[in-house]
Image (cartoon, rainbow, N blue to C red; front, side, top):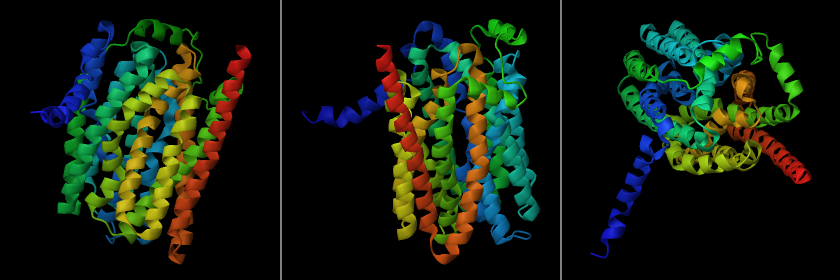
Length: 451
């Protein structure tokens, strides 16, 4: 009998973890919106599983290899493109921020979710040849662009609906649900694609339908203070970067601390975004993994690890400035890049699995800082503008970094130096991390000066 408590401890911990997601764990005024939004994220991410950069790069790399009209060069370029698409699409963020001004934010987000689902479903019409490869690259890019609008505008909903003290925790719970759904969907995609490469024509529309179910739930969310926010935006009192990218330049010029933070994010994020294409190349062309093995490394393992790490990162972010957060969190991706380097040199799938764990820990904190970090800089009525700057700059490096990685791999891999490409990614990450540590020191000195 004395062993019963230890036997049931995992069940108790699991039950406690599950109960923490119940709306009753939050103040009453937050419960209705939270419940609706959380439930919607149990369905919406399903359709994103097939256009996640890591998953889609494996699908493209294996399903279209050797097909009519597909050369090795065009295939590698397509892999770089679909890996970069989620971040490259972020260059459209300022457009969505401008178009959403003065509009009902929830309705705007809902329309973009529907557009994303339609674009994903259209992949079913594409043949498995050179034209189909081009088509999947175009549709994936457009779908990621519309989803960028969802991410950009959603942060304004979170800021109005949830107070600062609860925001990171709530965002963490939604990110946890999204990660679990994406991981489960990724497993499904890997197994179905291993049955037949043509199964993408079935998977994409089916998962899009599930996403539309989540959209119907999300449409019932209510934005607190929505009319007041729309009025402020329409009358011009809320400012705004507008459709002119120069507005972002003015914002960064006026907020030098945010500009410096974005500068170091550019360096650090560049290393992260360089890493994706080489991982896909090594997995599909050097280790010759199955669909499931490749998707496990690039998507499923990182996503499955995220729920375990998100609560820890959320508590930290609730209690500190995002600069201090990044100065700690940044080490996770450095470890992941270093493990990818070792895995490539040693041709070890198991080291890639371990790198996937490190990436999951990094993604857990990164998704919180991504969605909430700009709140530590932005006035409430310019939230979408600051988010647009952050997301758009991510898109700029998302355009350049994968192309650099593709060029380096094309140059070094034939010489047997694939590991050098991974090492370069690691060193770029380290340079960005040094910048975050430097900013943390300045932030603490300025806080002491005020005291």
